[in-house]
Length: 228
Image (cartoon, rainbow, N blue to C red; front, top):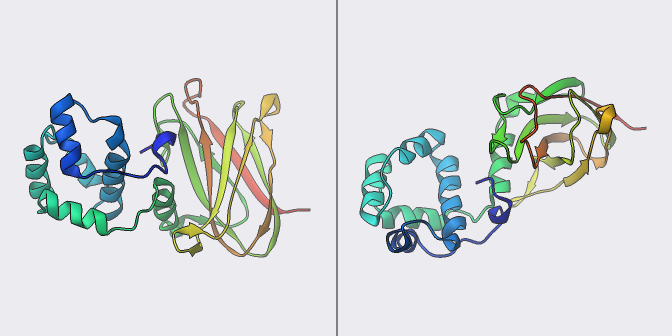
């Protein structure tokens, strides 16, 4: 789910193909990683995290075991589940994350100041221990214009990737999307400027590729204001 190599990869094969590969090789082979990612993303989107947790507690080493798990948890055979999966739009994991973020409209923050946590145990942080971690907030922009996003971090951060993506869509794509990458250095400060923001709600997401040296309580203090 959090591998850049598979984030927008096209899935090939079917669940039966993937289970046959597991039985032949004793593991899931690389060509089926995007399919596995799509299955997990599909379960998250349509059934919720609890279903994923329960499926992970079941033996899934063969086609027969998978069918038993699907029937027990979803009431679907492998072929019925495959048909439902195939009928769902081929969205990427990035689009899935956007869907989930924009659904939290009650958490919208107007132009003001607030704090985002990136420590592994902080609420809302996603990723892999020691690997890439990310967190997001929803920002509401009231007027068209350029905006400065002013960051002050509790410790130096290297290669911090900042994504700003509008919740308004054209099909599966956000109408507004931009990224910015920078390092705070010893000043622990960054102030990227984003242009041509139209009124609406945006997902502001922070990503760090390497969290191996990240403190457990790292924070980003953020304020947003029109510029200049």
